[in-house]
Image 1 (tube, rainbow, N blue to C red):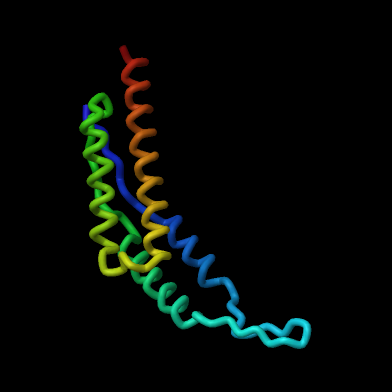
Image 2 (cartoon, rainbow, N blue to C red):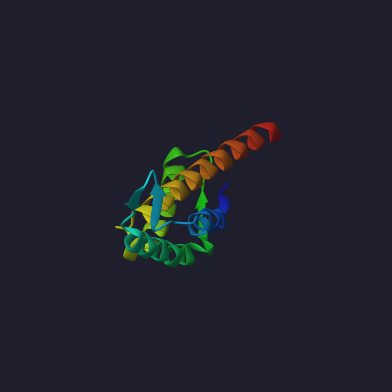
Length: 128
Protein backbone atom coordinates (compact mmCIF):
# COMPACT_ATOMS: atom_id res chain seq x y z
CA UNK A 1 0.00 0.00 0.00
CA UNK A 2 1.37 3.42 -0.95
CA UNK A 3 0.64 6.46 1.15
CA UNK A 4 0.45 10.02 -0.19
CA UNK A 5 1.47 13.18 1.64
CA UNK A 6 0.58 16.51 0.09
CA UNK A 7 3.22 19.14 0.73
CA UNK A 8 1.65 22.50 1.51
CA UNK A 9 3.43 25.06 3.64
CA UNK A 10 1.83 28.05 5.34
CA UNK A 11 3.34 28.29 8.85
CA UNK A 12 6.70 29.57 7.58
CA UNK A 13 4.89 32.63 6.25
CA UNK A 14 3.81 33.37 9.82
CA UNK A 15 7.44 33.19 10.95
CA UNK A 16 8.45 35.71 8.31
CA UNK A 17 5.62 38.01 9.43
CA UNK A 18 7.17 37.91 12.91
CA UNK A 19 10.51 39.12 11.52
CA UNK A 20 8.85 41.87 9.49
CA UNK A 21 6.73 42.98 12.45
CA UNK A 22 9.71 43.72 14.66
CA UNK A 23 10.70 47.33 14.96
CA UNK A 24 14.39 48.03 14.51
CA UNK A 25 15.74 51.20 16.05
CA UNK A 26 18.56 53.05 14.31
CA UNK A 27 19.84 54.48 17.58
CA UNK A 28 19.15 54.44 21.30
CA UNK A 29 19.91 57.08 23.92
CA UNK A 30 21.01 55.63 27.23
CA UNK A 31 22.84 57.39 30.05
CA UNK A 32 23.84 60.30 27.84
CA UNK A 33 25.53 58.06 25.25
CA UNK A 34 24.25 57.47 21.77
CA UNK A 35 24.47 53.85 20.66
CA UNK A 36 24.26 53.25 16.96
CA UNK A 37 22.97 49.96 15.63
CA UNK A 38 24.49 49.06 12.30
CA UNK A 39 23.71 46.30 9.85
CA UNK A 40 20.07 47.22 9.31
CA UNK A 41 20.55 47.39 5.55
CA UNK A 42 21.91 43.86 5.57
CA UNK A 43 19.04 42.67 7.75
CA UNK A 44 16.48 44.34 5.50
CA UNK A 45 18.08 42.66 2.48
CA UNK A 46 18.00 39.28 4.23
CA UNK A 47 14.36 39.77 5.18
CA UNK A 48 13.43 40.71 1.62
CA UNK A 49 15.24 37.64 0.29
CA UNK A 50 13.52 35.50 2.93
CA UNK A 51 10.17 36.83 1.79
CA UNK A 52 11.04 35.99 -1.82
CA UNK A 53 12.23 32.51 -0.87
CA UNK A 54 9.08 31.84 1.12
CA UNK A 55 6.94 32.88 -1.81
CA UNK A 56 8.70 30.07 -3.72
CA UNK A 57 7.58 27.66 -0.99
CA UNK A 58 4.03 28.96 -0.66
CA UNK A 59 1.25 26.64 -1.77
CA UNK A 60 1.54 23.02 -2.74
CA UNK A 61 5.11 21.82 -3.18
CA UNK A 62 4.23 18.41 -4.54
CA UNK A 63 3.20 14.93 -3.47
CA UNK A 64 5.42 12.13 -2.24
CA UNK A 65 4.46 8.47 -2.23
CA UNK A 66 5.90 5.85 0.06
CA UNK A 67 5.27 2.38 1.40
CA UNK A 68 4.82 2.73 5.17
CA UNK A 69 6.18 -0.79 5.68
CA UNK A 70 9.40 -0.13 3.76
CA UNK A 71 12.01 2.00 5.57
CA UNK A 72 13.86 2.63 2.29
CA UNK A 73 10.67 3.94 0.69
CA UNK A 74 10.04 6.24 3.67
CA UNK A 75 13.60 7.56 3.53
CA UNK A 76 13.31 8.12 -0.23
CA UNK A 77 10.16 10.19 0.35
CA UNK A 78 11.95 12.27 3.00
CA UNK A 79 14.91 12.86 0.68
CA UNK A 80 12.55 13.83 -2.13
CA UNK A 81 11.00 16.52 0.09
CA UNK A 82 14.46 17.79 1.04
CA UNK A 83 15.40 18.11 -2.64
CA UNK A 84 12.18 19.98 -3.46
CA UNK A 85 12.78 22.49 -0.67
CA UNK A 86 16.46 22.91 -1.60
CA UNK A 87 15.66 23.45 -5.27
CA UNK A 88 13.05 26.10 -4.50
CA UNK A 89 15.31 28.12 -2.18
CA UNK A 90 18.58 27.59 -4.06
CA UNK A 91 18.97 31.27 -5.09
CA UNK A 92 18.74 32.24 -1.40
CA UNK A 93 20.82 29.42 0.10
CA UNK A 94 23.41 31.81 1.59
CA UNK A 95 20.76 33.78 3.48
CA UNK A 96 20.89 32.76 7.18
CA UNK A 97 17.18 33.44 7.71
CA UNK A 98 16.20 31.32 4.72
CA UNK A 99 18.60 28.56 5.75
CA UNK A 100 17.15 28.42 9.23
CA UNK A 101 13.55 28.41 8.02
CA UNK A 102 14.33 25.76 5.40
CA UNK A 103 15.91 23.54 8.05
CA UNK A 104 12.79 23.92 10.19
CA UNK A 105 10.58 23.06 7.22
CA UNK A 106 12.63 20.00 6.38
CA UNK A 107 12.46 18.73 9.93
CA UNK A 108 8.72 19.38 10.06
CA UNK A 109 8.12 17.44 6.84
CA UNK A 110 10.43 14.64 7.98
CA UNK A 111 8.49 14.26 11.22
CA UNK A 112 5.19 14.43 9.33
CA UNK A 113 6.19 11.64 6.93
CA UNK A 114 7.46 9.45 9.78
CA UNK A 115 4.23 10.05 11.71
CA UNK A 116 2.05 9.24 8.66
CA UNK A 117 4.03 6.04 8.09
CA UNK A 118 3.59 4.98 11.73
CA UNK A 119 -0.13 5.75 11.61
CA UNK A 120 -0.52 3.75 8.39
CA UNK A 121 1.29 0.77 9.93
CA UNK A 122 -0.93 0.91 13.02
CA UNK A 123 -4.05 1.10 10.85
CA UNK A 124 -2.81 -1.86 8.81
CA UNK A 125 -2.25 -3.88 12.02
CA UNK A 126 -5.76 -3.04 13.25
CA UNK A 127 -7.30 -4.10 9.95
CA UNK A 128 -5.74 -7.57 10.17
